[in-house]
Length: 184
Length: 224
Image (cartoon, rainbow over all chains, first blue to last red; front, side):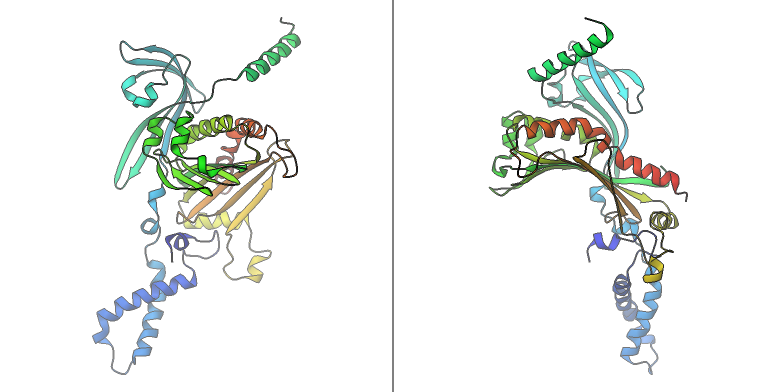
């Protein structure tokens, strides 16, 4: 049975994470282990078939104790934990000192100013830095195995330039609003 | 939200229409300046044929194209702007492509701190006393789907699912699905790629906030 199915527990119903079939599976595994260990201690009058039933019954009782969650979760898909995210606009590029400056808006809406070293950007992202460029700055944790990395990620937006028709629409809209407000 | 912790979060954007999978190679995206050299250098191509194109970019964004749909997905929300930009630019380049519908899907797997609380959420969302306990033993909620509207647009439909997670044990999976119909198959399709782009622009934020809004509401209204 795949891990995916093993993990699936109904919401508010079955009181442990196992279906009956899964209990049996666990029980069978437990039986094999237990039989190997204490086979010599079985009273002579217990037949082989009876011992299987005995161990199955014992193992079924024990089944819910089998560790579940953290062991069988597939953590390879775990998403990074985003700590904070800002959207920004470059206000000045200082190539002499390898710096750029930007207005930032935190995810909570709070506005800030920032100064960043160009070194913090990948080669590709550096090509997009210019006055007025929009970017996203994300701070996050990413767990890889037992290691937690704190990552600062810059992404410069690659939106297509505004088309002529969009400019025209914007002009018309501005005119319409201006006329309503009595501004020419 | 300390009663529950986000373990996996992802999004996908789906375009339904008439597409030619053969052209969708990372190098094509680079050649039409939709992606940079760095974006495509670590791309892992699974398959590109006349029927299907599937590859994952170095940053984890997965692209799958078959004749009637294109899906871009990622399980790293720090890449959501990248996906947005890429889908908008792709629609700009493929402006003549007939697109019948657009979907914006968002999902979050939460790990719920306490088993009793996890069960309480299920019992509250789908009480068992009235019917289920009378007809079934160990009745449990597996999946709840609510359909509704989030705008005045009659061609937009919104579905929200709340279900037990298949990936996280003692996990709650919440997903939202925004779908916009752009044209019926009988209609002559014109400017649908542009319409698809406009829809994504106008609905992106609300489509990607709904899951969190639903989850926050569940964790706030249902006390441990």
